[in-house]
Amino acid sequence: MSKRYWNIDLEEMMEARVHLGHKTRKWNPKMAPYIFTERKDTHIINLAKTARSLSEACDLLFDIAGRGKQFLIVGTKYQATDLVASAATEARCHYVNRKWLGGMLTNWSTTETRLQKFKDLKKEQDTGRFNQLPKKEAAMLKRQLDQLQKYLGGIRYMTSLPDIAIITNQREESIALGECRTLGIPTICLVDTDCDPDLVDIPIPANDDGIASIQLILNRLTSAICEGRALRSL
Image (cartoon, rainbow, N blue to C red; front, side):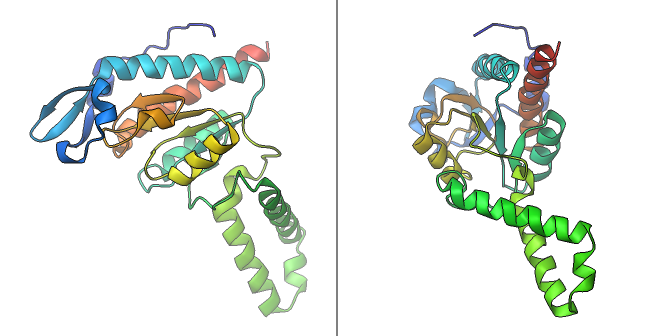
C-alpha cells in the first residue's frame, strides 16, 4: 500500500472537536491506547493516533479507488445523515443514511429484488404511468416508491456487495458492522471512547457525535477516494 501525505492538521481536528470522547463512566477499556487524558469526567482522545489511523485509512482508500473498487458509507444517526449523503454523492460512493434494513448485505438477493422494484416504480413514475392509474392505486405505488427511495436511494446503483465499508458510528451501526464482518468486507470506522476498536479493520479514534468531527473525517476519507479515482483515469 502506497504512503502519501494527506495534510491532516491536529489544530484543525481540535477545532472540529474530534478529540472529545464520552464521559469516563461510559468508556470501553479497549480504547485505552487511544485516550490521551481525562478532563472534567470526559475522556480526551489522542489526536496523534487519530491522525495516524486516518492517514492509514486514506492510503487504503486511495489504493482501492485506483483499482476501481466500490465503497459503501453508512451513517444513520441524525448528526451524520446529511453529511453522509453529501460526502458519498461527491465521491460517487453508495450510502445508507436512514434506517439500516437487516440483511441488506447478508441477504443480498432480497436487496437486489427490492432495488429492482425501486427501479421499476421509478421508471413508471418518470414515464407518467402513475397518472393513468386510479388515484388510490397510484397513491399506494407512490408511497411504496417513497419508502424505497428513503431506505435504498443511496444504493440504487449498487450491483454487487461493496469492497469496503466506511461506518460513522460503531454502536449505532452495529447491525451493518456485523454484516460486514460476517461477509469479510473490510471496514473503516469512527470509534469513540465507548467503542470496541477490535471489531473493525481500521479504527479511527474520534468524536462520533459531533457534526464537525464527522464531517472532517468523512471529507478526508472521500477526498482520498476521489484522488485515487482521478489517478486511475489518467
